[in-house]
Amino acid sequence: MALHDAKSFAKRGEQLENIVIAHFVLSWLFIALRAYTRIFVKPNFGWDDLTMIFAGVIYTIYCAFILYIEGHGGGTHVTSVAQLSDLTKRAVGSEATYIATVMMLKVSVSILFARIVVKRWQLVVIYTTVAISCISAAASFFYCLFRCGPDLDEYVVQQLSSLCTPRVLDRVFAYQHAAFAFSTDCVFVLLPIPLLWNTNMSRKSKCSMGFILSLATLGCVCSAIRFRYVDGLTQTEDFFWNATNISIWSTIEPGVGIMAGCMATLRPLMMCAQVKIQTLRSPRLLFAKKSHSVEMGMTSSNEERGGSKGADAVKFSKDAGLASERHQDGGRARTSQSTGRGSSTECILSPSDENHTFGQCESLELDRTNTWASVSPNPGDALPPLMPTLHYMKKRLHNEV
Image 1 (cartoon, rainbow, N blue to C red):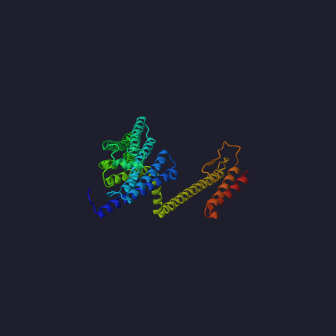
Image 2 (cartoon, rainbow, N blue to C red; image 1 turned 90 degrees about the vertical axis):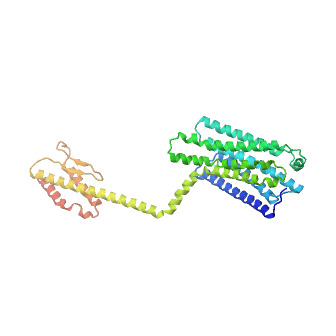
Image 3 (tube, rainbow, N blue to C red; image 1 turned 30 degrees about the vertical axis):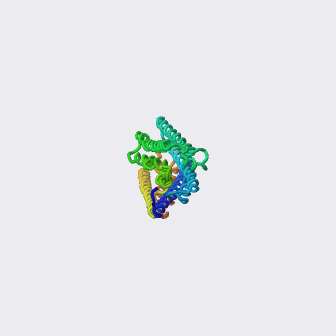
């Protein structure tokens, strides 16, 4: 047995404790953000969210086991039988909860992908992959609990008496679980490629969506690194010293997987936050834009109003001049043009309209004057040069009739 000083013991224990606490806090932070996004930002809470929360609960139990082991001699050379028996039961519990956490994580990710795929073969691939992963995890789970018998209190005694399963079988179950977990992650990493290949999206959007979907399988890298330390689970001699590295990566793999799986669903929350940040950063710019738009609207309305005033004034003067010329020449044609209130159409009284009289068009002319008086900024200045001509025309017409 190799001898180590107290400094190396403290360093290994402190490193493991910091990793466990950091991943535990971050995992639940991302789970909370995911639940908030799926409930309040974009209501779409489903089974993938529920299984992710369940995976977080199991991961919490795993972290509790690891912290207990680290605080009671984990990462050291344990020689006391009583201490070894106590820590062994927690070690079995931590390994079983690790397997259950990874299994629930794979189920959650598979449901997430199943909600967005459109082709049948993609569903078959997802269901087949997650089914194989669950079978492998279930076999490893029960093997971990019963490899030395159903009584965990006798686990150490059975182990010291060489009554447990052989180390070769331990390696088979340990490596097969790690291999299937890694293979499942690889399938989920490659699945977004055919999923987004034929979609009507720009290349930038495809890369963005592919990156978001691949975040859910970021634990693939951790699974590959964990392969190196799997043999530490099968070394029964000085187990708690040799299993420190595998404990570290067994903590990182599901923690990173939970965070990545939740991060893949936070796009609506990030977009909402981006809009709010832009609003808080540039309130003056928004106010200036609104003020500018209001001013432009008022200017355009004033220009349109002024243009209609000028057009009506020209039409009214032309009508008055035309009527005076015709009556001065002795003609009997009673034709006038006028504009109704609030409209831009013209009223033209033709000679064939015998039922119409000049008084009707005269009333429209007076109504036009009132309209100008109500629209003009200075009502008293509404067409003053034309008023004497209008009175003169009325007087001549009455005299002739």
